[in-house]
Image 1 (tube, one colour):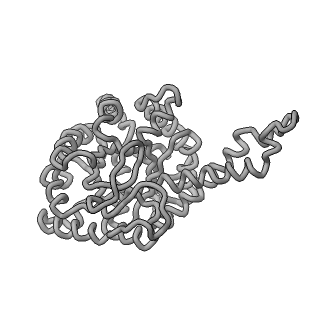
Image 2 (image 1 turned 30 degrees about the vertical axis):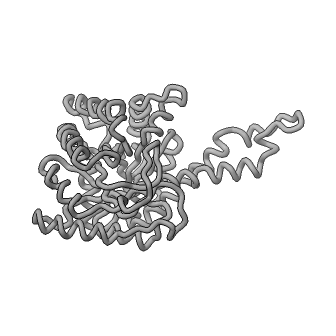
Image 3 (image 1 turned 90 degrees about the vertical axis):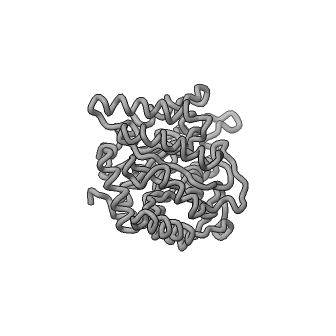
Amino acid sequence: MPIATPEVYAEMLDKAKQNSFAYPAINVSSSQTLIAAIRGFAEAGSDGIVQVSTGGAEYLSGSTVKNMVTGSVALAAYAHEVAKNYPVNIALHTDHCPKDKLDGFVRPLLEISAERVARGENPLFQSHMWDGSAVPLAENLEIAKDLLAKTAAAKIVLEIEVGVVGGEEDGVAHEINEKLYTTVEDGLATVEALGTGENGRYITALTFGNVHGVYKPGSVKLRPEILKEIQDQVGAKVGKERPFDLVFHGGSGSTLEEIRAAVDHGVVKMNIDTDTQYAFTRPAAGHMFSNYDGVLKIDGEVGNKKAYDPRAWGKLAEAGMASRIVEACEHLRSAGTSLNA
């Protein structure tokens, strides 16, 4: 299928919320990890979201070039072509973008999509994230309001973060403390500033103890009941049941029970990066260890071209990552829910 249109993406998000499931949102940083992600969604029978961070976008442009816009446009162009060969819908998203990178990442990409829409085409990306977690809430929402007007005009969904995700990702770091829990007051301020959809569609990462990075299950103290409290109290105030379409960040180390509780409270998108990075690299490492005398020219020998051909270990890496995405779809209940099923 082609990359999801704005209408298809909206239908995807609506279906997820109505049926209490969420889409894995998989970070990619190369054409091969992109293929692995789409393959995983196809094998799970799930529509899905592929996303690129600021660091991933830089890498995609060439590790010595480091141009976030070039990398993002190149990824999107490649994705629009290869996605046609898979029977599921894929939405393209840009991940965490702090204030100091808006002008070099999200805003130029928004301009490209606005130009495309003006020509009668679909936007290049289906959603963009503004990460205002490092600035005061008032400033966060002021910038979000400005961006929402632009994303709505370009038929794009805006993702915001209200609260703080602990740990570090792409240079944005936060301590692990009580600030990791969004409050009802934060939720009320959000709908007061942005509305509940009438000013443009947005999805919201409310934090409930989330932490980026690598953690064993049980190490991260999540409180998904906070999501229900915010949905209930803000919903009562605005007269709308579960007013927020929620995003789950920093999910590594979460238990399946915690994940599904969050989904039950309105999470429609869950970011997955750390686990899929490992799932991609582990089979490649296994190939290198098992075939070291083939991938290396040891003691003056010539090695084995079939062993060091990047396709040999690349296929294994792709399959490993795809398998982990199938597992994610099963955990989030999106397996078998494709709009094309």
